[in-house]
Image (tube, rainbow, N blue to C red; front, top):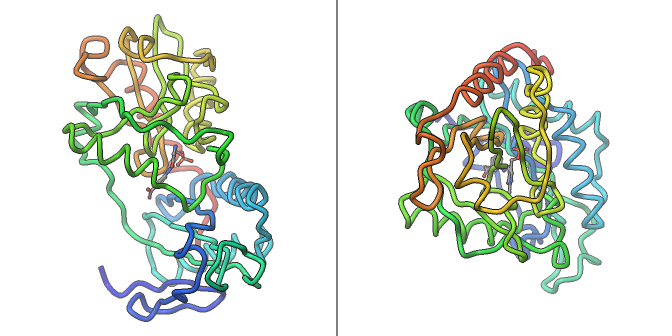
Length: 292
Ligand code: PXG
């Protein structure tokens, strides 16, 4: 990777010189929010939805982003232009900013805005053909009573603990349950099943992030005339489903063919999942906010 241009608070720096304070509360306390966004073929996919979620995450943690949505959008597009990429990944981070030691953000006068653009491949192409193995993690998804799981915050430790469990078990992703033992989502993706031609996904209230790709999958299913419902789900529903797939900005739509060593359906990516993936690829190539 050449020295990428990184945006920090309105200025561009080569990666080797892109630095923030050790007193930044994003580092000290994981106090901040972020988004992972993709651009394809010179267009940013679902940009407005990501920007909207960022501002909602910020509002939920009592943080006022010092740039408005239009300014943020322009900063993001300009960062991609400076790096001269047509396809890639954007990591947009807004931290509480530089402050004192001590939890209180009282002495953090201004949030820090960081925009990183990079290439990304989360899973090899083979995984989209053969499907991922998933295991249930013992680490539970964060409870609403602790911090809303809808906030895309810089506190990812519970998902990271779960991801480590999944990796140790030789699985591509880890399934996370909520405190009640109901299915919430995977460590960095939302989960869907297909049973008797119908699609279901856990409700956001079960502890899932309101995924942008989740919404796209629901939109495509709707376009296909397939009903999507959001009932509370248990692992039993996944064990006995015909098909399963995961959605996320980084993962896109990816089949899952095994949960806890049980094959899902016939253990191969199913026809509904394949159709959704094909349509998703079409959409990412054709829709989005033009960069140039
Ligand atoms: N659940 C969780 C916990 C996530 O973090 C998703 C679901 C999928 O949401 P979207 O809006 O992306 O469809 C996420 C997204 C990364 C990375 O770099 C993480 C995510 C997305 C992209 C990159 O770790 N998380």
